[in-house]
Image 1: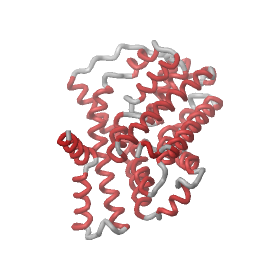
Image 2: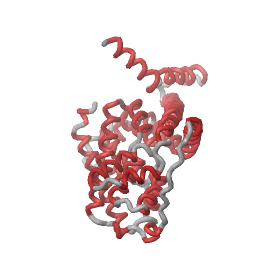
Image 3: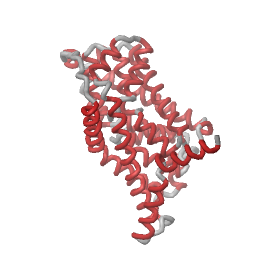
Image 4: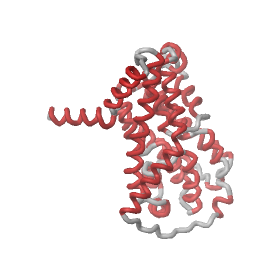
Length: 338
C-alpha cells in the first residue's frame, strides 16, 4: 500500500502540481535573471511564469480530452435528454449536463435561449445556466492541482447544489412569462446530430482547445498578474484586515468585488491561490470565485436581453444569496477540507 501511495503522490506532484516546472522556473529566475525568488521581484516573476505555463499546459490537455467527451453531447441531444424529465430530477440533470459544457457565463446564454425556445421548463434551463460556467471537469482538475482534492470536490458539490436549488426556486416561482417574447417565438429545430468519426472528434477537440484558449488567455494573464501582486507585494495584514476571517462582511465584500469582473474560473484561480496564501478564509475565496464566474456584469447584461427585469433580479438575488450562504458556511467549517 505504501508503494502505491508513493507512486500516486509522485504522479500528483509531477503531473498535476508540476513541481518539475516550479524548479525549472526557479532556476530560470535565479540563474538567468539573477534574482532570488525570496525577494518580491523574483517571487513575482516566478509566480507569473510558473502559474501561467502551468495553467495553459493543464488547460490545453484537459480541454482536448473533455471536448472529446463533449462531442457526444451536442445541444440537440442535450435538449432531448432534458425534455423528458421534469421536477427536481430535471434540475439535477440540467446542472450535471452543465458540467460537460465548459462555457463562460456569456457563451452559455445562446444555449439557454435554445433550451427555452425548445420548450424546456424555465427552472431546468436556469439550473443549466448556473452550472455551466461555474462547474466543469477541467476546473475540477485544475482546482485539485492548486488546492487539493478536498477543496476541489467541495467547490464542485456546492456549485451543483447552488445550480439545482437556484433552478428549482425559479421554477417554483412560475416565471416563464418573464422571458422575452422573441425567445419563445424562435423556431426550434430538432435535427438529429450527425455521428462523428474518430478523426472528426479529434479535430473537433483540437479546434476547441484553440477556441477556448483564444477566449480566456487574456483573463488568465490578468488573473495571474493580480495573483502575483497580491502574493508578493500586498502585505498579509492589509489583506486580512479587509477580507480576513475577522471581518464579518468579508464574504459579502468578496462577492461584491467579483460580480463586476469578467473572467472564467481559470482566470480566478491565481487570485484565489494568492488570497489563500494571505490567510483569507476558504468560504471568502469561494464566494469570490463563484461570483466572478456565475454573476459577471457582462453576462448579466446579456441575460437582461433575454429575460425581463423581474426575472433577472430574482436570478441575481437567488444566486447571490446562495453564494454568500456558501461562503459563510465554508468559513465556519473550513477545518473539514483542510
